[in-house]
Length: 132
View 1 (cartoon, rainbow, N blue to C red):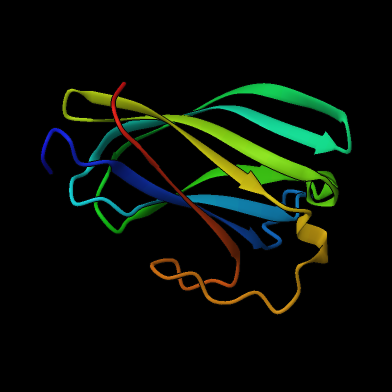
View 2 (view 1 turned 135 degrees about the vertical axis):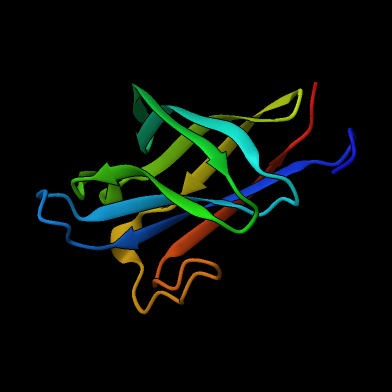
């Protein structure tokens, strides 16, 4: 990865029950050619029409290899009824970028396709960031 190459990631939202009372899992997938030194999910936002709010969170993943994935957020399903956005920062070598992932109303999505690199059905959003 050169210094000007973007840092590329996807987040996939997958409907799954994991015995925690929540309905949706959000997985970070590293689509870059280099491992992520770290990624930090720092905010989860919810928007319904003109109304919105966000929740400050602190979920850190370290050493995510190219093509690898990590569970970064679980939602109880209420977020699936509104538009959601996940805000992350990621670092590769000495470069740090912000990444934003926006999801539609997930409860409306049916017959979700398999997510490449994850092997689970889900809705995926890609983002890339460059320094600066």
